[in-house]
Image 1 (cartoon, one colour):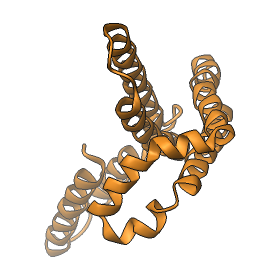
Image 2 (cartoon, one colour):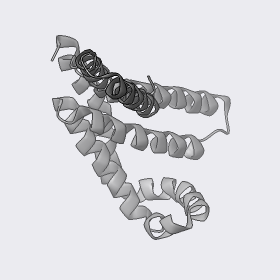
Image 3 (cartoon, helix red, strand yellow):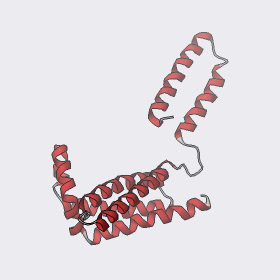
Image 4 (cartoon, one colour):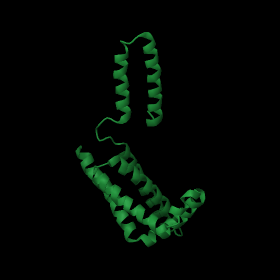
Length: 182
């Protein structure tokens, strides 16, 4: 792990850990803020109503997720999965905070906008953490190089086998491109 990752991950995670602890400590307030968003989600996705109906539980799950994923990100264990969980919880947090923020005065509107920008920036940061491979090759790179090595081995195959190999190689490349976007 580079020194930048060693320092940056705990710094980024600290905000989420503190926010998660705050959400758990004040779960009644969090549940109240979540209510309009959860009601809309329940109307949009009827199968989610059983989960969205219990705002207290959702508030505690969001808080616990932020603490757990923040800790994992901070120590560098399962950091990509943790970052993805933090993206989801941050997006929910951003919507909830923006909807429940006061916008009656000019100062309140400025504060609301600044909070929105801060939250969107944090989402961007954890999105970067979610795609960070920690200096190791990602799955797309590994698949590409595996295909290249296999292609070299295929040069010694017969003409029919080579055509079948090229067709399979094309399919693998297409699938890898669809899955990883590269």
